[in-house]
Length: 300
Image (cartoon, rainbow, N blue to C red):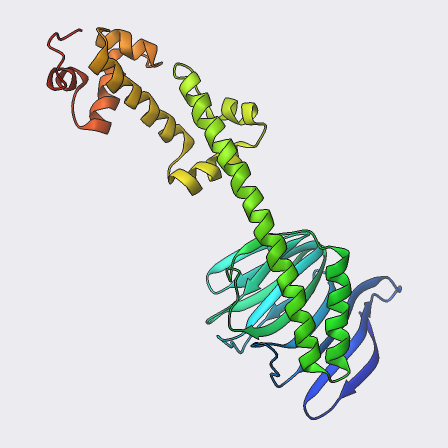
């Protein structure tokens, strides 16, 4: 590989190398770096940025931090391509519009895992982060963001770190507001999907499958699984089973249906399967529950 470096400057307190190009021997462009690093922290409104990187990388890009500052955050925003970010024991694969604010205690690394990985990276310190560190967010990279990132890098390069930090604060706040709006929309969508899922289960007590529910909602089965784990802390099939069994209690308490009829109404293959499931869930047989619930007759 051949490298071409242009516009290199070092001084006692900081350094930057911009327009770092990497070529293969036949001249095909592979990587481009534009960055600036300052060794000191200069704060404005309790926030300071001391490193800004604009990175267009190839599969050879692999960074492993040897020195970890627990008080520092690293914002990585992917513009294009695929990368992998490892923070302590957590690992994420990231793509376009993915954002992670890394805050490591003992391990931090990131690398390109696709043909390319193009990203912005900021090292900063802040008292009130607002967003959750070491969490994957997804938000579109708007033109205003791109303008601000270049401005942040520009002012850091010309020695105006406080001004650069002020612009970073504006940039961060825009990201924060956009993510909060997105999360509210996501929550509303998730609540709607969850409500429709439960209604679908109630309407299909005799014949239910997660794949059919996914088709009804027009989402993947993985999305349905994650939805129930997040909000109900169980799988959709287990949640469906709980609904069936709650309905069986109502039948036992308020109807004269036999155990066999109730099993059939709720889609169980036979009364034995129903009785076994009921006992596992309520620690009582259907017959015993019906007796203790106040229904005198023991309908078989």
